Image (tube, rainbow, N blue to C red; front, side, top):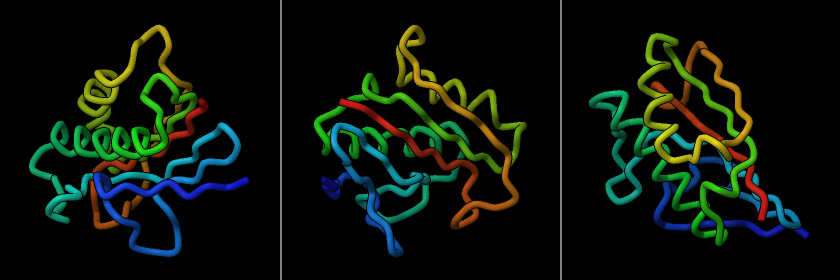
Length: 126
């Protein structure tokens, strides 16, 4: 059975997709970018603030599914510039216990929606 997860604490989808889908006990969250859900504005002043907004958006989706970052088993990080990797990794890492951190990949891409610097998607299990 498929359940759509939606929260106003994360940016609303702007296309034919949902913030997340819960199938059985597995949550598949769409990629999040640094949009502040309260203002609808992008947070791109610096890579730390942008990454933190992305992670806060993911946290809101996890909360809507009655989960936390401890439930995350896989993350995918897409970045525009690999020179930002260390800063993104530091912010990202602050949301996880290093001993139970999820599997993940980080890839540099040619372009991201709205020309942001980072997008992160996750899979979590209850």
